[in-house]
Image (cartoon, rainbow, N blue to C red; front, side, top):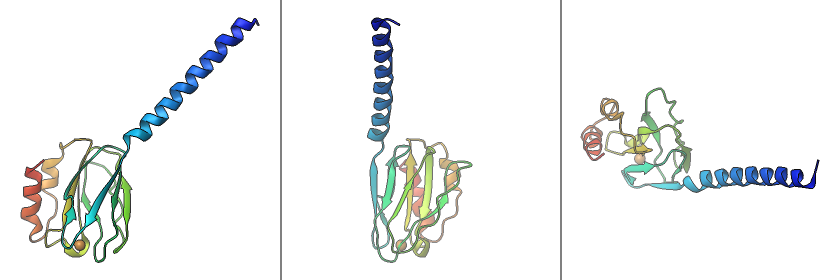
Length: 145
Ligand SMILES: [Cu+2]
């Protein structure tokens, strides 16, 4: 093996390392942290737009939680959160996700998350369960998408 061959191999290895490092940073750079507040009887924002892979955080608030009701086809919905606790999730499948606050689901404390700009399951979400005041509210929120 000549000195020249070794140099070529080394430069290939360095190129590969550089590409892997770039992919790693691009992946990290694209995922954001998005925060949702749980106010008196509503979430803020009520409609959240996220990228695939963003971390979504509901900030700790007394008397509220997050319970997913519907999402894109065949997705397994995140577990219901504990009352009075911060809740973090990452959604990997594009589409609309619909959730409510368990004790306030009948008085309009509902939320939507649109992941990856995909609203193709809007009709299915419109058919999902909604109680009391939340029925009208869900319909009007879906109109805004
Ligand atoms: Cu609540």
